[in-house]
Length: 403
Image (cartoon, rainbow, N blue to C red; front, side, top):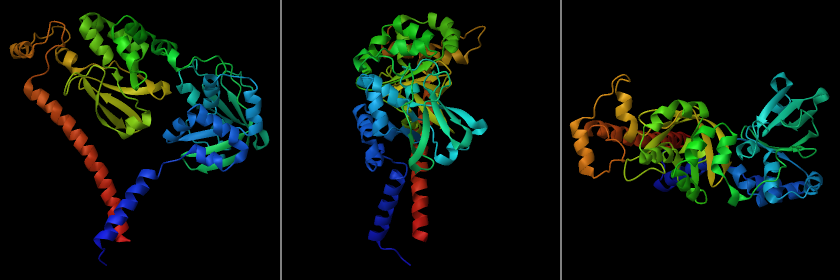
């Protein structure tokens, strides 16, 4: 049977809306149906945690009823400290009732949103979940010596396998989460890095003019990729041979002047400009998924995000397993044998001279034909991603028509 153009268009629009909203959830609306959690719901909004919860694809909220919240508020914590405590009650994994009672070996550690605040020392942002005797499930902070003061009460709402809202009996106690917390104006990027395995990179930033650029972008949006200490230490001999301007460029290359959550990076594969970008196709890299991993491809190295140091919109800091090497500085060096680097080709020197770069500017790019290939690869990658998305929508649409 033939479909009218109007019906076809209506079906297509409905399908697109269905696809775009399939993974959406709103924690405020879920809790609004249960007045016994009204205080908890209010403070999720007041601390801006509600928005952060809604942006995440997979989440478990350990909700406190009004009585449990009253006991927590009696501690007279600042709003910033209270946000840390409530963040400990938001797990970045799905634990529905069934999964809760089928934990492998009876106990597991679950990462919470407090672990991503940057205030958690070591693994203090993890919650110990243990299936006790008689079906009782206990919850305790990792820094609380394994003591359980909070227990599973009931399931409030579940959207398998994305969102679970579970009631627990008492607030999870954590000295680390309850420690006095500075406000946003006191945000210290290098201090957060140094506390969580990126001290070497933080030290380079402190000694560089690049730090002020990172600080200037915090309020408007900032994403930082911080190499771990061991890889930075291995990179130091190369770093010391760079000019001051080149050192600044390398450090700025590890920042993006917008906020990009992990889910956003997974959804927006393609070329990203950095804090070092100056004009078209300069000091950018490509974000590319590899299963659940998010990789950063510079045409010289490919780094993988291996952890999150802090995620508090408008800023986020990720830990990566390699130093990001921009092709503008390192492509020629990487391509040459380590024992006897080849001298720069004359036409490359002429190109640098013609461009008007000063002595501290990045080394010349690859030959023109190679640079063209690089750009073509970037264009093809972006186009390919768009075509794949369109193909998926079209396939679903044809399936609807077949019905």
